[in-house]
Image (cartoon, rainbow, N blue to C red):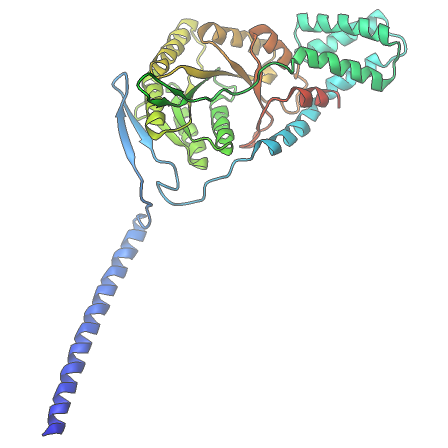
Length: 392
């Protein structure tokens, strides 16, 4: 009797156990199947915080504000931009390729006796380096006087004189700081530093905006990018790619040929809402009609200034275009108040004199130079390294 009762209890226990075990295995299998299905559809892992917000700008145009990569897809690690020290080392190395002009000047000035033909050759070398007519003539006159007083043709002495006079022309005392101070309005609202980037299409303007963003991220700034070059189809996508690489938020329009001022407004608003330090706004660089360019840039400047003053207006110039680049620079200087120059493609070129020419013509300093095609090949302009490299 006792044995029969014990057997019955054991059977009931085992039956219940196997029923629950089967149910657990069924639920686990169902979960595995759903997981596999999600993987196949590409929805396996999305980090919290992914978002796509829609803004309505000043002109009524809708704008997408995209979350940085890593938050959006969780795929791929963000790049870590290089700091200033490494960039400056590379700047000196790359600029050393420009030493052909300095070497020619040193060879000419190291002659024991200089005649008029030699001085004409000196002036020609300076003009070929895009120094500009007035700065070249000024430098030749000073060299004539200093060489006469020096009374020496030793290469070391000549180099010291040439270095001193070239530094005077480049002007190492001028303020080349990128001013990125945030401002607070009367209502106590904090506004980001607003940087407007202008320049002719083809100079590397949009690429430069991306490189400046990387530079600022390396300095610890939180950055927002505004893709206000809405007239060039690939510009917004190009800027998005640059932003994706370092986790920088990009504000762009959802339609082609949208109002650039509206995109700029949305970019500044997004940066303010997020508490970002800096907003960089890329602009169109069409020069087909000067009037259209003036109207467009003027409107962008007015719209951005509604929230807070514009901190910097950076003009991007191609160092290899020489005097033609100077003419372009003058057009932009008539439209907006340029506060600094970014010279691209300065590496390995004998056109380094454009640094002096553009500063003399516009009365604003060169603040950055592009020294190659790499993502971090943009560095603060160092007058001493520049002149040293010219004479290396």
